[in-house]
Length: 149
Image (cartoon, rainbow, N blue to C red; front, side, top):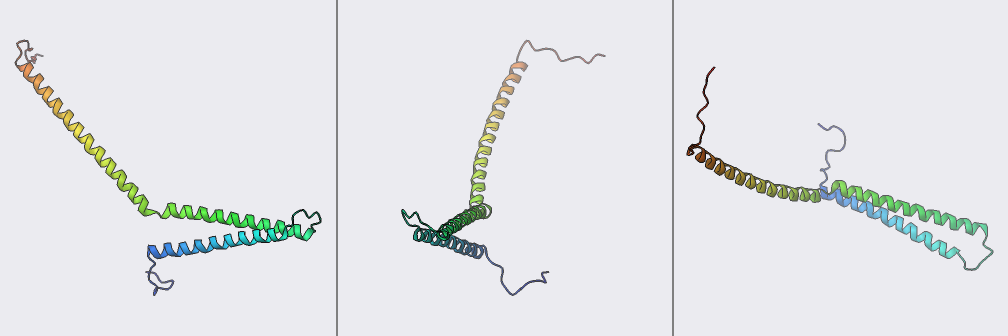
């Protein structure tokens, strides 16, 4: 019996969990893209074409903004990796469909093999019967082995 936690909350359905995960990932993606855009916009605003007299603070700010853009890009790559893992681990419907298709293929192969075995067995029975008939109707058959000791 579960004594810890809040038992008044109903268990979440698979759809609710997937919806919550989708919202979480969407918020993360939106946040990272906004960081990229904001930093890119600020770099453009700071930069001046053909200005040889950039001061150190502007250069430092550009480097900082560039670093922030790289961090946001890495964050997006991590989100993509999490989404791929989530898809691989939780895509039961696709996995179930693949298993069903493989089962159908194997059942068809099994039926084909069983038919082949049955045909071979029938052919073997016919051949054996022909050989037995030929042997018993032959004038050259050998006498039964004697049991002399």
